[in-house]
Image (cartoon, rainbow, N blue to C red; front, side):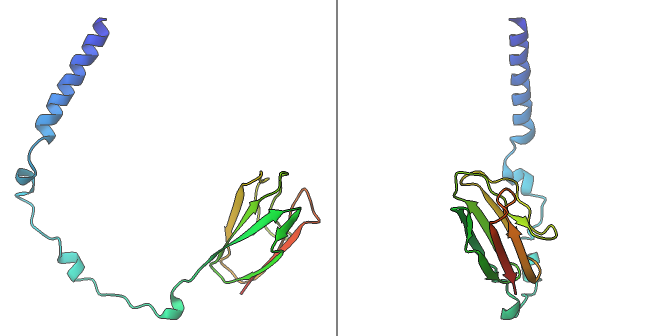
Length: 140
């Protein structure tokens, strides 16, 4: 019982001390600070980015359903993201045929794996437990 009383008193002392330390009005705290709110914005030039360089990346979805990737082949642009979602009741993967560009864990039903393609090329992939399941991403 005494420890609860001691804890209560300590909490009360901390609250009162906090009020006195931090409870001052904003007018007193801000009186010595110069107003520089517009200084930075006025001195920053606007950057013009050519329209061709503006990123127009997309997110494209591939369903894993009926033991196949749908669509099985997909052409995308550099910077696009592909999301594979397993709609089957069995586990599937998205695994690169060569290299390690793609490598999901076993995906349970309704779980997804995503990858952003940052370089051009053709990327073949398959499902590890079901090697006949094949897909290809062409990045231009």
